[in-house]
Length: 414
Image 1 (cartoon, rainbow, N blue to C red):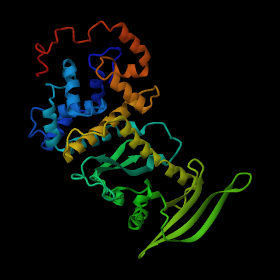
Image 2: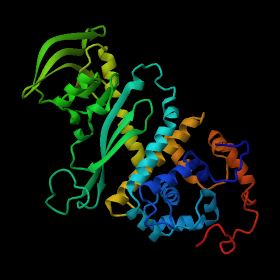
Image 3: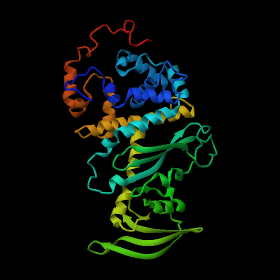
Image 4: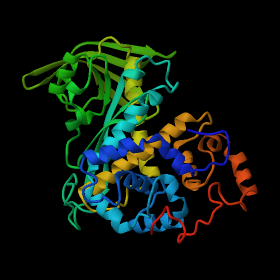
């Protein structure tokens, strides 16, 4: 990606999707019968249109169609042969299998995983590369018919539905490495599958995942878990050590070796209780590791908040309040495309030497989405390139010197 010139023959969006392999994506669509019912709107066109809509934060099919109509002269630079109509997009969201978009996400993640994990942050922590963080986030829906909502039915009004996005991230990557969708009523523990992990892995989870049988299996596999302890757990302390710190000898941490019991299960673990000054509360952590320093165990659990940050980042920067279709397939497609958009912007963020917040970068990408400027140089020094753009505002974009009226443009049938 990238050339030495500041002004490009391809809009910013066209350069961003260069992370994707068009030939491979079309093959994925054929392999899942994605071209069967929507042949005039192939998998690449569907993906590019949906990514455009998600990054631009559009709330309806009408907004998508109107915006792309305004940019019709530039669509051939995105690999689109015709202007997508909202009826065509609605049909594609209903008919093209969501597994196509899942394959695109997983392939994109696998392709750039080394780039994601090469970030120098937290390099000093030897356990970071082995740390997996697991959690879920629920997206509210207006209907309870497709995905059942959690909790009791309200006394007034209909119960809203919800789709639960179960997610696993590697701590040194910051994007989902595994994703599963269920209804909001599904318990989180469905995602905890010990045999998917390998010896040496470290797993940071919330107390919703506590399952003694699975914890025993994790211990057998050589996988370390760190979780927050439930208040009602039954255990017997075998030993305890109180660690002190500070001039006045105030208690810093209580470390106990315990045996947890539930029915016939007897699980050996370590219980670490400490006072969190930031949250101003006492926290008890449970782990099957008996060797690491208690400070390291606490640091591992605090890294669990990285997944909360990811969920917040996605919900703040992409539209998941309104969906472009009412079917389960359409809803899942939009979530997969949102995850792909998040991954693409994360890759862009990691490729830059200039420090950008994710929200700041996403906002700037939306502003210059269809501008003909160099993606790499612009985001390194946007102030300079914006001045150049103002100076050249009266000139037509590169590769558009010819007559590009809709009537005479052979690239974009309407």
